[in-house]
Image 1 (spheres, rainbow, N blue to C red):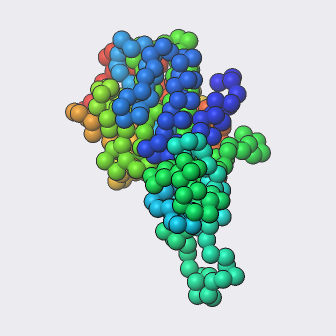
Image 2 (cartoon, rainbow, N blue to C red):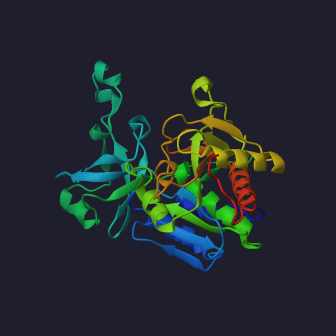
Image 3 (cartoon, rainbow, N blue to C red):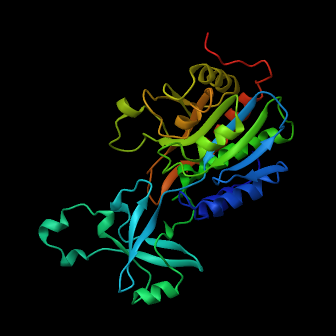
Length: 355
């Protein structure tokens, strides 16, 4: 993978919380169009890019393109916006953050407010903040002024943080989870594009995973694609930070390569085949146990129609669901390499039925 990460930065910086993923999806499809002419978006907001459409088997690569965010629930007479969560937040990281409200007439900057610590009772100072007790201040002095800015109930917003490059190959962004999954599946398609494999490969930037309690966009895209095989790319907890219990989560480091899930939605025959490819290609990797649900798109995809052999491949991520999630770019590249190399081993006679 010789190109730089300019596309990744554009993708990460595009505001697109669950249910409102239009902007990053457009960025993704614009890039996908440089790889294949077979690019489209469905009614659920899933973006598809297919290579070698008539090939066999049919492989679905899924990475969700949404991010967590906030949504306006009420605008009071003083112009303050009250909010609820889109996806799972630790409210403590929201206090004092700047936000971008996606209004109907354009983006509106704001700040998340809370009673100043000087005005709190000693008892209140020790209590954790709750999202329902926070508000967003856009500078409006009345509800009328807020409405004149193009704001209304239901408007989504994201924390106003762009991608930042840290030392080495590490980057931080509010949207790592899981826009990097959408990035990786398209990068795997890029690695395959010059010399298409026997398989038909469709990369999908799925919608609404963070709120997809019933499967989100992954469920509908898997139903329509009818894949013979699926690989889901998401993030997992990097356990190389203080006070993380490796006995529960495993040993996964930034720079340690892709993490292959075993159990639950991950089809063991597919996982074993991917592990063999990782060993052959010299790609660093670790294993993760998922004895129950994976809490990813894999949970919906593997139960689509008559069942889809599915593998979950994750990238180690620090500071999950915060304004500054952190990953290694080399981990992204190795994940794409593993997926592309694995797909090249597939052919019309491939059968992952356990025997």
